[in-house]
Image (cartoon, rainbow, N blue to C red; front, top):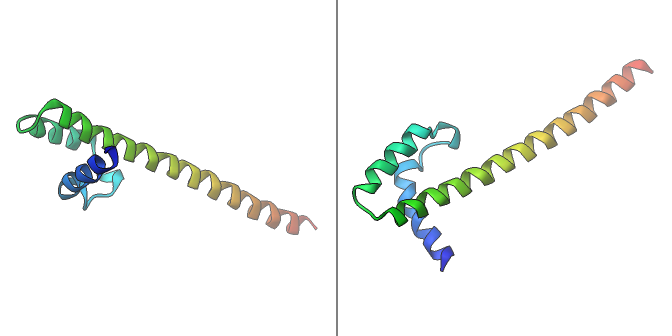
Length: 88
């Protein structure tokens, strides 16, 4: 049931935020969206939509951090190999 609800919520969010990168979405935009939404739907619906957005942001942040850490680890290994070659 929750999966179907999330699919519906994504369909509602896409027209509003779908053309934006996550880094382009501001707290002001979300607050404005929430305010407008509260005029037309019940608070539970607003909570559901904002909860899905929060989960998407959390996943994106974790992925970004893991990718950055992985990239830094990989780059450090390359730099250590270059430094080792220069010292030989």
